[in-house]
Amino acid sequence: MFEAIAFYLFAFLTIAMFYITVTTSQALYALTALAAGMIFISAFFFILGADFLGAVQIVVYSGAVMALYAFGMMFFDTTREVKEKKGNQYLVVGLATISAVLAVLIFAAPIISDNITALYPAGTEGNTQEVGMVLFTKYLVPFEVAAVMLLVAMIAGIVLAGKKMDESLTLMTEEEIKDMRAEKMKPKDLK
Image 1: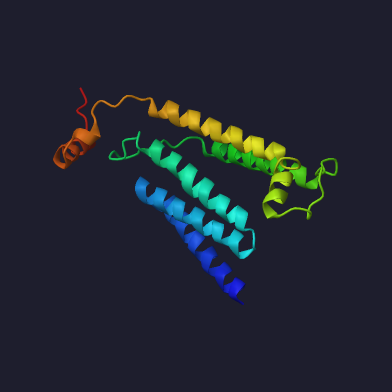
Image 2: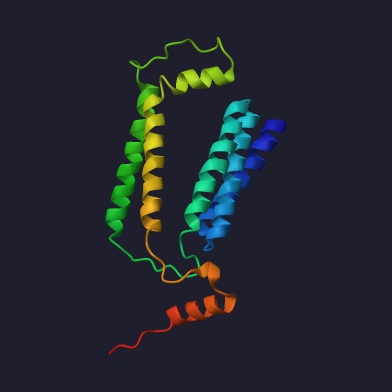
């Protein structure tokens, strides 16, 4: 009974945090809600008795990845309004569908494959040793793909942060920032 109540509680809180992450227009609120959602996901591992995975979820995602996001967020001007271009929606849907199918195939291939077997039988060591054996034998390819994806995301963040800002926002007062925002919002005169 306790597990069911805890599951539904953490499921609701996780979905609520990720909903806030997706719908808010404030970058800091989105970052905080994303970190809270990652911590709530770790609660599922603790409920299932996988304490090591729960701790890894907190340390890796809520710690390292969120620190990386926060560091990347410092490089962007969050005071200006974001204007999105409406591109070809069919292209976006098609690429998203192809990406989702490829992700499912990459991560499902080791699970459904009979050719890939663990070198050591499960159950002889503790939880941490079992996770290590399975992670570096059967799930080595998805593990490496995730590492490459994180590397690509880090390089993309560095490239995007390389844009030079005209003025330093940290040295400006609140009034100067408001004036700068008002100046950007004014319609430009057409000549």
